[in-house]
Length: 70
Image 1 (cartoon, rainbow, N blue to C red):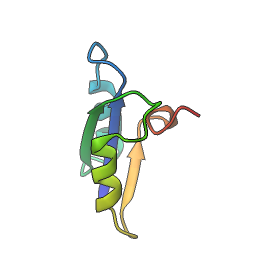
Image 2: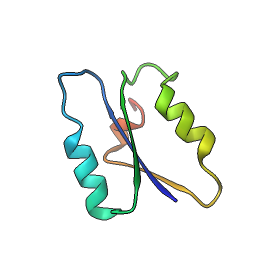
Image 3: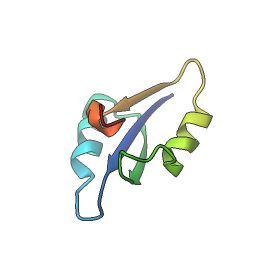
């Protein structure tokens, strides 16, 4: 499976660009969305995704900054 992880830091931001970019390359990706700051590692959707993926699965991001701050 291919999973796309999309994260914004505040409700005022739009997540649509991230979803569109991932779906343009991986149309079959299952998208998980979250509004959470990058300074917190206890992101609920990220935790669910991380627990669900297997060795054959792939997680894609629109940019590395959506994964972490560095």
